Length: 336
Image (tube, rainbow, N blue to C red; front, top):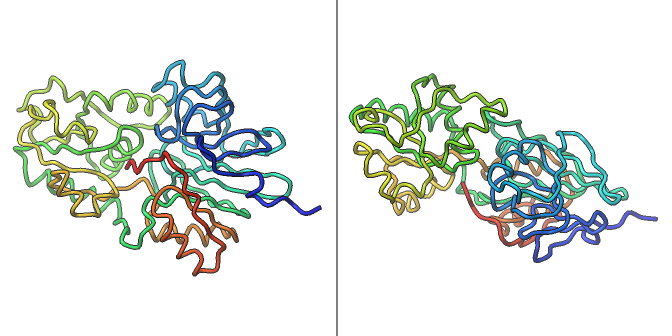
């Protein structure tokens, strides 16, 4: 008997991508009985699922964010450990997106499908690197799935930030970062570049930085920005969520240079509209070259593309000889 085609047992539903023989969803968009969660960003890890399978780091972050609503019951899986769910073998492999992020490798009756979750290919000192997984179907994100998105080297962007800090010793640099992943990565990149002074944090970033430290990621000296005087903050780097730029909290900073660390800073109009003076193109998603290289590295004959610039990557993949289609999953954000 021939193996059933993946589209007969893996399908898009209003709650997300559903694996029928295992009776579980991957990153469901609303509460379900069984969820496999690829990483802890809130558009992939939602509260109130009855059972959650994820890495220990992802579960720790979900507990910190959701408390008792992280999941009715939870199951930790190490990278490379296979868990059988209803006849489907599920193995989590590193995705390189944020700490604990994983690709979900699904094996069922002779088929091997890899759900990438969000991923990037470049080195990140705060998480395990992406590992290409050979498979029959590769389900890939396409957040930056347009040829215009080619990210510069991280070290180049960090050097730009440090050069600006040296030019304006009387001003502080206010760097917009998302609380999970981007914040800790920027801190680690600054440390690798030799910046060992204390970094000042908006209160919304402190909890996850403390959790990263407890999970073994050293971040160096960190101080709360709240309560620090303008004199103390002059010449310093302050990290804050992007939303803090416009609120009263930022008015107490000494003539801040507004910076933002995001792959979207490649779009000059987006940076300008956000009032960003120093755009830093530092992304936790694969850029166009990394997406196309990943298709070659994985070698799956069939590609399904989800959340992002789906049609452009489908067009590229088809031209490169892959069988490709867009999944059109809804409910995932372009958080960067």
